[in-house]
Structures are given as C-alpha cells and as structure tokens.
Length: 417
Image 1: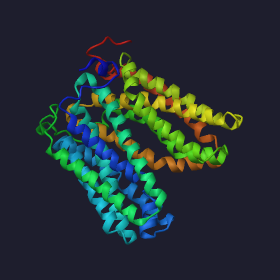
Image 2: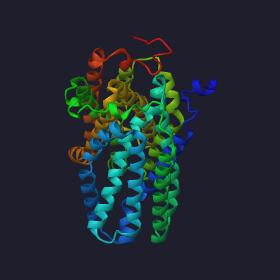
Image 3: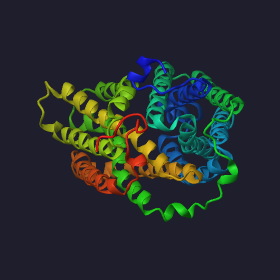
Image 4: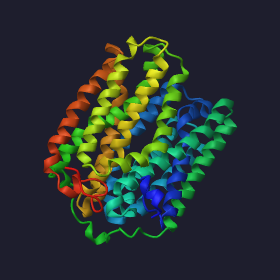
C-alpha cells in the first residue's frame, strides 16, 4: 500500500474498485431521495402529510424482520449476491413510485419494497465489507465505506436540493427515475463482480439462528450498544426542533450543523481510525461514550448560553458529537465481525443492524415524550444511558478474546493494554 494512504488510515483497495463504485452509486441514489422522501408523495400524488407519515411508518415497522431474514440468506448464499438483490428490490420499488403510486395501498406496497431493500442492503453489506477486507484492516474498511457513503449521500442531497426548490412534479419524477437507475446500475454491477476472496463455502452455513441467543456475551454487548445508537439517531431527529423551538436560534443552523457532521465524517473518519488502531476496541468505545456524554451535556446546557455565542456553541457541540460517532462506528462493526463465528457472521451483523431498526422506530416517540416534559430532558437522559452503557462495555472487556477487543492493527502493532 502507498505510504501516505497507510498513514492516513486508508485500507488496501487494489482489486476492489468495482465494489467501491457500487457503494458510491448506492449512496448517491439514497442521497437523491432522502430529502424529499415525504414531499414526493404530497407533490406528485396529492396525499396528505398525516396519511403519508402513517403509511411510511407502518411500512417501516412491517419490514423490521427483513434484517434478520437477510442475515440467514447472507450466510447461505453470500453477501455479494444478497447486496445486489437488495439494490434490485429498491430499484423495483422506485419504479413503482414512478408509475404506480396512485392509491394509498399501492404507496404502502412500494414503500415496503424500498424499505425492505434498504434493510437488506445494510444487513448484507456489513458482511460484504468483512469479505472484502484483510483481517488486520477490518476497522479501516468499515470506516472507509462509511466515509464514501457520506460522499454519495452528500452529492445526492445537494442535487436534490435544486429539485426541492422547483416544487415541480416533473422534476420529482425525473429524480425518482435517476434513483431507480442508480440502484439498478449498482445491483447489476455487483452481480458482474467476482466473489471476494474471503467468501467462505456456503456449505459451511448450517448453524441455526438460535445459536445467537445462546451467546450471552454478544447479547449483553448488543444491549449495551442500544444507548449509543439512540445517541447517534438523536442528533438528526431532535436538532431541528430543539434549536428552533427551544433555543429560538436561526432556522439555518440545524441544516448547517448536520452538513458539518457529514463533512467531518468524510474528512476525518480515516484519520480517526488510524489514530485509534493501537488501542483496544472496547477502550475506544468507552472513550466514544465519554465524548457523547460531553456533547449531550453541552446540548442540555445550551438554553443558558448567551445568544451571541449560541451559534459557535452549537457547532462545537455537533463537532464533539460527531467525533464520538467517528470513534464508535467502525470499531463496533469490526468488533462484532470478529466476535462472530464465520458460519454465523451474516446473522450476527444483521442482528446488530436489527438493533438499529428498533432504535430508529423508537427514537421519534422517545424524543417527543421526553421533550414534552422539558426540552433538555432528551439530552440529560442520553447522558445517563450512555454513561451506563460505556461502563458496561468496559466491564465486558475482560470476557472478549484478544483478537476481538484488540485494535484494528492487532497483527502489525502491539496492543496497548
């Protein structure tokens, strides 16, 4: 690997460029659709916002089990195939958005297709990343794919902004067509690529899903991570409401702050992974928990900050919050991948993605309930939950094998105990 790439934390990518292109195209399609995922149905089909919101929520909940089913399919048929199928399913859903969404039941069916495909993608792609990476670069690969996905999402979101400004149904249809094309291209390209070298024989994948339920260490670790997932999701969910209604700050701040979040992920993720490699993964997660406690504490104290300092203060809090995510994201995925038996890796990683799905379903109700009591309560609650979870992970550390809790470069550098 080139020296500068290694020093900056980039993984070895030779021979995997086709897979990276797939990740970018997929993220571009997601980025194009996310900004107007609700407005599209209002502008083009004339549905009311309550009907749209209820239909999409039901579709989201109904597709939750898709993640767990995908884990089994990945272990049997391979992550490359299942990732490609997920993208083709999403392409079919977007084509349905384009031509068939004239009634609420049809909107539900197509939304369920898109959501199920998205869940399949995240459940399968985690194992695909493991199969693409070498054993000592797992953390780097998870960080790298996360960064390039943010690039695609950012570009897609930027382009979608121009369409939102027009409020023209024809442009909305054009954008949906481009989304469908992106997913179709990504899926077809992935089917044409060879199996990664790390792909194991599918005859090995015979173990039952119930074996995960007997892995008490994994289940305890998974439960400990729920608070971290809620903390990540809380930023995008609560910041617009909290900033504009509770703090009475300018309405442009939430969008700009979330843009800062994406820029930091794109620009700093690989360097953060490189700097944390000599340290144990469990310690890195513990540090991330501490940083999240700091950022949530800053958000909770924001109402007492003078108005002349509030903008800088909020951007600082978002930057600190993002730093915790940079520390946590690649580390936890790599730890779970190394913790899981190879014949169950797809199911282990899918179970972690299932936890994300549960948290995503809970976060709107959790935020609104706590916010109704007092606007700062969501942040105060997160401080307590994240602190307990951080201590729990450190308590579990001694039960992990060295190759699981060890740093991302465990085969090349000594661990710091």
